[in-house]
Image (cartoon, rainbow, N blue to C red; front, side):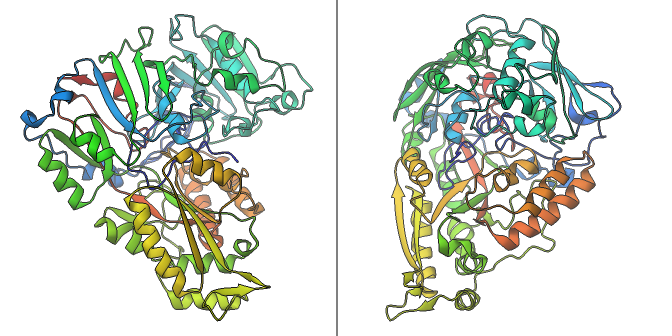
Length: 593
C-alpha cells in the first residue's frame, strides 16, 4: 500500500512540508494548493515566472477566504522565562516531529514525516506562494505553449547539489524518466501526466522518453499528450542527481535506491548530518544552496511522540503545534516565552476504510457508521471549537470547496440503525449485529495521543448504540501503525492528508488505487475532467459533482478540518507559515535573536 500521502490525524506536531515534498513539494502524491480569482489561463505561449499568468495548476483561495486574514499573532510576553537550555542554543533550532521511517528520497517516502525531513533537503523547480500559486524555485521562469501541452523550464544559473556538483537539465530529465520506470510504485503523479513516449518507456519499448527534451544545460521541456491543470507543479517537483541516484540505475530495477534513502544528496537549504531512528534528525546548513546559506547553522527534528508539550515547556524544542483550543492557547500564553500563531492548514482528516472487508463494501454500512459517529463531539466540541466537521475531500480554504448538495451526516443513531437493518445486519442477544454468521466488528487503528482517547471514548459509546463491536488499537509508533494498515489487518484507521495545493491532490487517492477495493469509473471520469482544463469555473463544476459523489459513496469517512496553533521560541525571527507549504518556505530565513 502506498503511504506517502498520509500523516496521522491525531498528531499535533509539525504538519507542513513542501509536498508531498513531504507531502508537498510537488512530488505529486498529494502535493499542495489553491486561491482566489483564477489566474489567466496559460495558452498565450508567453514566458511566466509565476502562475499568475501561467497555468492554473494550483489556483489559490478566494481572496475573501484567505486564511491569513483571521490570524492573530500573539508575541512572547516575557522572554526572561525562557528555559536556560533554550537560551544556550546560539546556532541550532529544534522542532518536534513524529518519528520518520528514514525514506528521505523524494518520490519514495513511506510517510508524510519522511517528506517533512526531505523538504529541507530538496528544493523543487516550482514552489507555491502563500496563496497556493506556483512560484519560482530552482526554475527562474517557465513557458507554457498555447495548446497547454509543452512546458519549458528555465533553470537558474550555477545551481548545485549539496556536494557541490552542478545541477542541470540532465538531472531533471533523469528524474522524470526514473518515475516512468516500470518498477516505480511510489505516489508521484508525474507518470499520469502522459508525457509523450512515457508509456513506451515504461513498457520497455524505448530507451528514452521522446517527449522530454534537454535543450541546453539550463533548459528542458516536456510535451504532454493532453492538457493537465496540475502539470506545472507536478513537473516542477524535486530534482534528483543523475550522477548520484542514477549511478546504479538499470531499467526495471529500483531497489538500489533504498540504500540511498538515509544518505540523500539534495539541493535544499540543509544537508542531512545524521538520522537516529526514534530520536532525531540532524541537519547542517547547505553552503551551496541557491538562495544563500541559511542563517541558522544547525537544525534538528526531535522525535516527540506524545511529549510535545513537555519538550516545549522545558525548552528542549523551539517549536511545536497544537490544536487551537482556548485551553491550549491560554496555557501557551502562560509560558511567556513563546510566540503564538493560529492558522488553518489546507488539509482534511479521514477514517480510511478497509473496503476489502465484506461488511465495508456495502455503502449502507459505510453511511450508517458515518451517521452513527458523533463527529461534532469528537472533532469540534471536545476541541473547544478548534476544528470543523469534514464531509468532502477539500479544505474550506480551497477554491473548490462546496457545501452544495453535500450531506452533512449529522449524528443520527436512528438513521444509522435503519441503514444497518436495511443492509441485513440484525442484532443478536448480546446487542451486536450479525449477518451470515459474522458479527459486525470494527477494528480501529489510531495514534497514541489525547485526541485518539477522545475518539475511542465517543466511538465506543456511539457504535455500541447501533450494534457495532468496536475494537480499538493504539500505536505509539506511527510506522508500526502504517505497517498494520499495509498488511490489511484493520477495518478503520485514522489519517490526515498533507498540505494540499490543488483540489486534485485531495481526490487522487480515490482514483489511483490508494484506497484498495474502491474503483468507480465515474470518479475517475470527473477527476480527469477537472484536470483537462485550466478554466477555474469548469474545474469547480467538475469537483462539485465529484465531491457530491464521494460524499454519497463514502469510500472513506471524512472527519475534520483542523484549526492549529503554532507556538515557537520568542527568539526565533522571520518565521512564517503557509497553508500550503507549512514552515519549509520560511525556514531558511529563521534566525535566533
